[in-house]
Length: 181
Image (cartoon, rainbow, N blue to C red):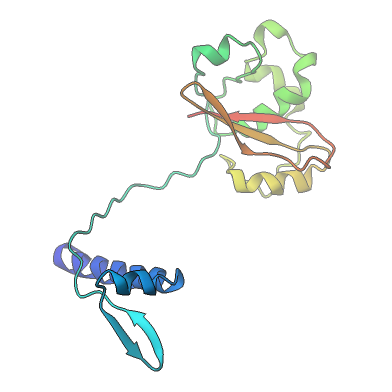
């Protein structure tokens, strides 16, 4: 679909969607009092638009949040010395992050960010059925196959850390991931 056909399709879809939302939100009295055209059809009140004055359509590629390769953390996070940021070159950041959380006391602390520190444990996690990079919605699948683990995920934006996924408090386990990118 190109040019005029896309514009006609988008305007028609927008008009129908706005009409549906207005009906759902039951704004009929407000609309009537503010000059919106009201019509009756099959005993139901409904609103219809005659034209759309302006329609702005923004299209962007959807990139679901998920881990992938190593991303350098902001200096203020590094300065806290509370995050192990494993320097992986594959798309298995999730696996390396989990292993670093499970075995951080068992590796050389001076090189805990090296992926080679965790190779000896790479087969201990049950990863069947996961696609890398792992998306937030697939973490539950991981937890079902690894029932002793429960994962929290935090995001970083500017100078703020915020929760993206918090585990059920009743579940026993450990593991916290921080997503940044």
